[in-house]
Image (cartoon, rainbow, N blue to C red; front, side):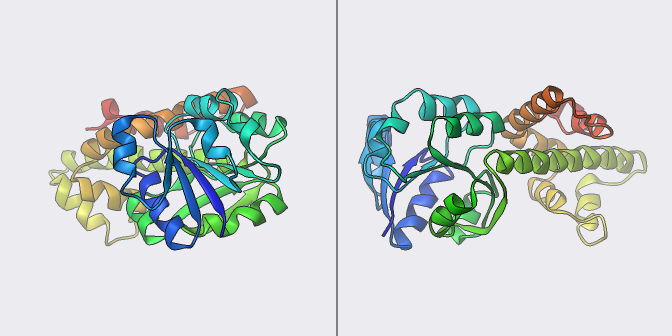
Length: 265
């Protein structure tokens, strides 16, 4: 049995609790407010109200908050690292700046960045995709925990590389949305109904996971609006990291602009 702490019991974290418990792990989860603690009382986990308590006695602590700033607050400014036992591993599921994970590692903490691709149904089914960055032995230690809800668990390199792979993944995904925006505009010029066009394309060589997600929403514009918050956040990080490294987004720049709600037809 592995003692697992979880910070960020939201739409992704809640089903993680259940998968972890079903796999035989003992779960401790953070509930900051009275309402969140009341809701979490229904889950198979011990609920605490302070961040450092999550780390006390834990073998693995999972961080599944929304933004990179929140990762920094939880991991660097809360006292969490000081309560982690020797040999404990911190796993950051939040998509953010790879330099944040590297800074955490410089504090002497065993850390793995494991940003995710998928949603709550994938967690519940145990099929969440994880892009994992970390030392070989550290990843091996946390892999049984990650396999509770992740499949595939893809080890892509040292700390920070999981974030870099996820940022490229989301860049390509956003670029596909941008291309679909242009395609829908072309379809309208040709007199085609967008919903029927997109549905038809799912059966051809133009099919993709991005297209399937758009079809479920009914239009490119509606899907872009529904994903603007999290995808826009990730693209801001991509642009900042690329600029800092002198990397060139090249042809991606134009289609990324078209992936935003303002760029949709």
